[in-house]
Image (cartoon, rainbow, N blue to C red; front, top):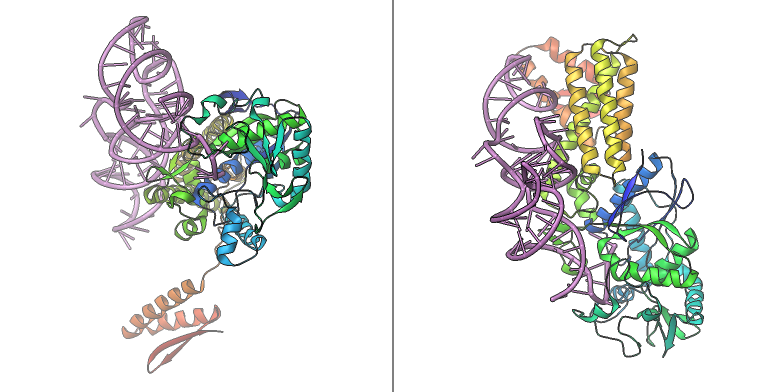
Length: 484
RNA sequence: GCCGGGGUGGCCGAGUGGUUCAGGCGGUGGGCUGCAGACCCGCUCUACGUGGGUUCGAUUCCCACCCCCGGCUCCA
């Protein structure tokens, strides 16, 4: 079956064919690491995690690059580097701040079960490449230098606006941006910025001390690791303009190869109370906070219960619903595991042939759903249907064929894995608290038996517990216990 | 203002020119249970923003309108 993906650049579904038969070069814009990762970010990375998993499931080899931006991102009001600003506040080295939040970011995604990209290159590790690229763009007359700033001349790039459908002339209409006096045209964007004398983040360049503009780092790292043409480039919707539009301009101007990216994939926003979750709006929930309240796989099920391009609203009710749904799926898995323990080796009965067929049909529907632009909500629906069929089957059968149960079990787990589900450690190690609670319960129960004079049973409990390493001591102040 | 995306049953959320359909959560009735839970079955009124149009037939296509969200150099 063919995979079809929705390409932002022409706004429609297209058959997915990588440039080199089964090899996929994929780039996703990573975070600027100056603060905790929030659920809005997680939504995007979770979506692309499933996209990568599905591509691999389909037999593609995927080379996945996701950058870490650690310089060049400016605040709106003071035009100060976000990282430098925060580092100043905290009185620490900017790269110390970067290192901290980068590690926490990776940890957050690990906790959510997101597979790491193949490489996570950092902007500051590519200053040489960036400077070279800027020089080259100047030489090709796509860029110009004024007072230590280098700008990309948008008027030289004919296709500008092809991704976002924004016309350069119309751009200024609702603009909230103050135009830099050195720009030839208001829509030109900075490739290299002159650094203030006391700037914490600055590097020497042919134009003096400065730092890279926001869009160039992704462009250059994309080219460096994936070549002049990428199969997939992704990110959230808000990156379409200007970030991705500018990447196209820079890369195509630089390499002369079109298109820079074959398939542009963009995720919808995670909202909260119907509004975009964003740092600047202050309405965000960090991944860490979410994980304190909800299990990682419940968060995942919640995110995947809406299509990746749709908006999804973060509410407690929905997370709880996801938890309940997940519990249901896990119940089926447990039932299957239990059934396998007393299954038999024999030919399939009629009922077994029937369930086998149903499972195969639902597996097919799962694949169909995922092939249609990674339709996870529909894929999840087939998982629930599968669960219901299995529950019904197991309820009716006393024993079943071991081969069949194994087959069903593996089918279910495999589909779950593609979505990053059912990875939970199911053999739970008892927590200290649980042991305490259980022993306390037994002790109380035993006290009741002793009061009733049932010493045979109460002594039996004591003996059994001793075998398990729990020693009970009946004292005048009541029963005390300890572990051997 | 310009440009996108969207409005589906109590809540969430897929989908489609037509006959049985999503799916989940919640509620409710029943089955199974000594009870509870899990699980299964049923129900949750004419579900598809409003008004037109095309069509034998539209939630799905076209037009207009209303509302929501987003982008228009901070953003995943």
